[in-house]
Image (cartoon, rainbow, N blue to C red):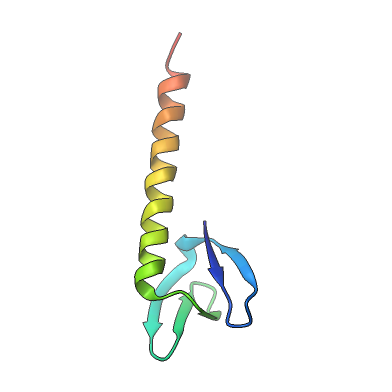
Length: 72
């Protein structure tokens, strides 16, 4: 999940797995799996960085949880 900012300044938490693709013209357009289109203030590069950071964190937390649950 990543934070994004709509064009009106409203922030929302987005499930990054729902992003099909990103268009970068004058602003950034996210096209979601639901068919919804969402214009955001963040650049495509910033979105990629946020998604990568979130996924690294999620994988790290999953590995940590597996290590802790495997201990006797």
